[in-house]
Image 1 (tube, rainbow, N blue to C red):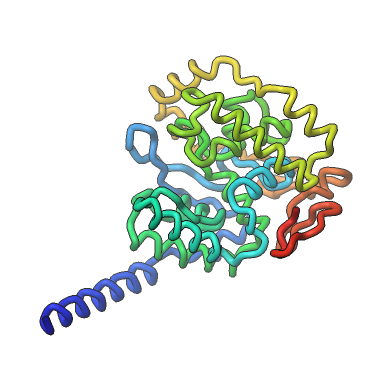
Image 2: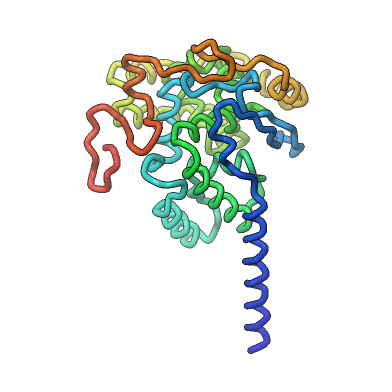
Length: 317
């Protein structure tokens, strides 16, 4: 018995050392502070093959924060990580709930990753579900929160998130599904993309489960109204319309067959960066004034939703 205990203890020490070395070898996140930074990462297509993807202003699909509708940002925050402006990269309450759920269901079906964790994973890590990768993800998320503003994290997340077959980032997705730049998306279209986030390959793939995606987008629109991101009139207009995604089936089939085209187009180092509204290469535009600016998620710390009273836990009602 004593030998078993010693062996188990030595294995634990070895694994702890392995985790420590793995974390030590992770790339620094400070480089992401510079809005002009471009880094090449690896993304996986729907056939399991890896491709190079350029993340940054030199990618023609890059959309600076000022050109992403406030409704898109809030749709993602409210649907994916309601405590985004309260946590520091890791949502402990969500993790406890996920552990409780998984123990009750005897599975690992429920995740508790914050937007920061998802951003760290998408940029630096693989999709493998291992304890080692989770430790790396947690460490990177904490480092990103120390080095980057919340606004920068959202900008990176919305430019690297998967939204279709070799469709990464809202800039690419808005043109792929709606034939328009991200800045021109309607609240319904923003909610539609946000609805796909839990599983664009299967569960929330609009090609296979359009009704499911639309139901979730309706739920997200209700959240936007309840948090006063949308007025009653804007909400009514949004739910009364359906996203125009004509030819979606053909697009999906062609994308799956011709994934190499995506790699060539969106990772081209010599293509012109998205200039946004400022007209200055690689520099995000200044936020606009008026209603849109009032709804814009805060860059750090505090949620700026108009006339929202917090509940007992400090969450917007």
